[in-house]
Length: 153
Image 1: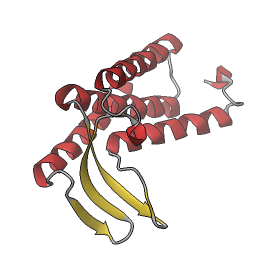
Image 2: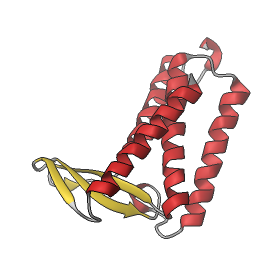
Image 3: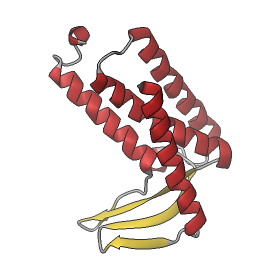
Image 4: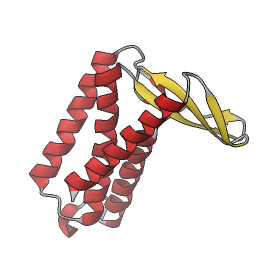
């Protein structure tokens, strides 16, 4: 289950980025919902919110450590709860998607551009959405199981 969901997340992320680079020019923006949602093609050479910009090798190294760490954790703890499996799959698929972008291009393709109450949120991609959603699911799971007590697996 983990391998299938991880692959589907990775595939959806990569396909969305391929569409963006084939149909938008760099820095081009398309309004989807006025004053809220735009598709804007940018290249992020760093991590979230462009931290560590232009430190591609450092971000690659950190990403690889995270990916290996998640795989190690899943294997070591023999995750059998479906909720946890989905959460880790979302995080892993998103992390691999951004990692592959960094290897191929030296940057991550970002395109989801949200403006809310006058604030222009940093542009992100589907991999980022999957990662955040996976983390939220893990937090919910943890709260539902005694703040991290894994005895209910």
